[in-house]
Length: 263
Image 1 (cartoon, helix red, strand yellow):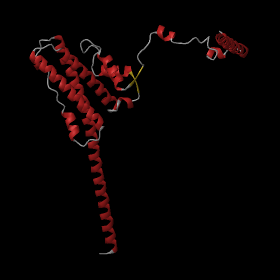
Image 2: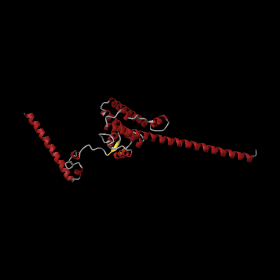
Image 3: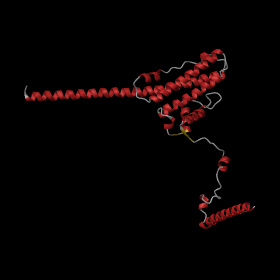
Image 4: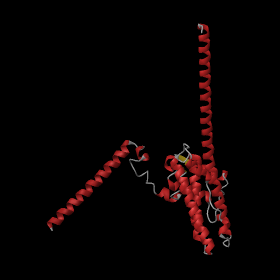
């Protein structure tokens, strides 16, 4: 083999090697990109699945509250294949949030089973309905934290405007009067606040009359904002008057003590 043939062979082989490396890298990049898109789609499916289950449960509770003669067949079983798939797959996700979703499904299933048993026995479903509504409120709060804050803990989510939570529920079709005897959006906001989410504005704790009665008299406080605006001479006179009053009181105490000893 001549030197020119050797260099031609070497150059061709090197080119094929580079092309093969680029092809392998491109295939790996495509696989990773497909996995990333699949993981995003799976997590979105978990949100959609929980939202559908919650909306169906809200509808079922409203139907049973309107008609106590409804049977246990009005309550459909809860299924969550998307969540099961995420649990079984090696998807990079917030596993703590996934565990919270699993616990939420367990609570929903337990409340629905209890309500189904009450309806099958023909008993008054009022208490079971209250428990089911409470579980539904918890589920909506969990769904909000999962969708909007990526499953973060409420205390780590920062400050959130309460109207943002209400707009989110409105966007997903959770009406204010969806559950009987309560305002659903208000209940979810208060539940998130009780979980530690910092929602603004804060609820009012005093009436205007109570709040302003709590304030001290700024005109009487010489060290207050208005007191500091007084001339130094006036402040000094006030302080001297207070000192004189203290001396008079002390002298009176000494006189009383002397008279007591004399007697």
